[in-house]
Image (cartoon, rainbow, N blue to C red; front, side, top):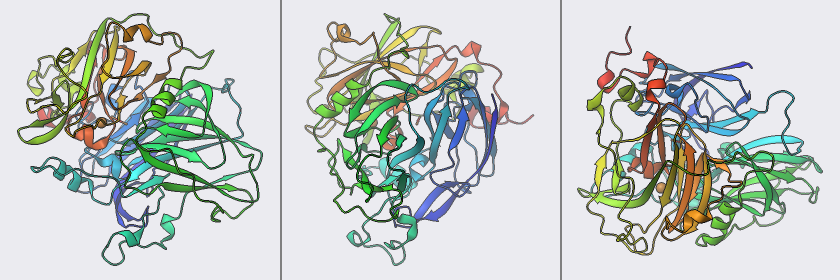
Length: 546
Ligand code: C2O
Ligand code: CU
């Protein structure tokens, strides 16, 4: 095993990723940031300097479980105090499993300002992947807003409430194209001929097979991704091998990663489009485009055809079907425990609390404390957060999930779920109607510090007597991010075997900001000595000084 050392400088710079000039957060001058390449068992060290001048910072390593290093998870207010401007912080952790992972900002809504990148972990020496390919490439899909994240944050927490709305463009590996003529902008701000906003190009050699690692870190959008004229064979999801299946379009939700195999077996005299489009919400954003360039054609030559139109946005059935098609690959199955020790149901609701619009779980909207949970729990600082346990479910008999609720009675809390160490926990995510008639949204839920088994998805209200009988206990996929489909349920199981405090939240940036998350804590007495560098804020003022 090797040590992979990185030194990062994080700052704001003016960039035009979709031709529209705005402030973008860069790492060593790049957005997306540098790709971290490693081999299973390696130790990653990233020394991060916050050069944002007027903003705090924290960076999360999405999909890395942080076994033995819960303080390196990078979750502001959960595992560490943020880096204040001028600070340097050393993240150090091991990557214990091959696969495709991500990193991104985890302070406020910074992720959507461009602070993200890929982590690619290869298997140990002598171990090969259970599928063959010639070349390996990564792309991250994002949606892009022209407003600053502080403006959005202030609007979301104002009365009257102002929603962020649909994104201005979709980016493929940090590149997109906004139609400058569609909205007036001050002179010089939107420049369609800026070379920065030329499409991303993936060059392929005819006859070769490509492993394309596709990830989504959208702020809001659920996406479909397609490659004109080419099928994709799905082989990996969130670091686990998938029983291969072929798709024309890949549905992907924020926080998910997939590897797909693509064979460059089409007409080699031309290029093809890759496209991504919004699903699940009524699109107001142009499809994101990139070029699949058949060598030796010119990489910028536009394909002679129209880009493939993705699937229709408001049909949930194919999305549910694709979620259900993802199974663990034969020979790589981790069998889940047959039963669980505890079942927690999380009803996803929108609420009004004192006139503010919030998202909630079981009518409790999550708020972050000013002292990180990990320090508060380890050092018994009881005043830091509400010590009462939050609700384990909702009023199952009376709550109607298909109608607009009268949810004016929510509360806001920073209470957490304490899990008995080494027990098995089931989570049932239950979707419902929002505060708009006939509307239910897609929520991608992401768990820090663990992978979970995906036991099943279904429509309507989860029935604890009958739906549990349909669980897949034979070959469920393990993941760290999973969609909750409109008006549906998703059932998960995980082992509470990683000492620490871990966030579980909707990966929609604005939803989490509006309270859509919870914290689990387990095995706190087994957590090693906390580095003083994670302290210094809230009740830990001065704890970071020797
Ligand atoms: Cu990728 Cu807590 O997030
Ligand atoms: Cu959500």
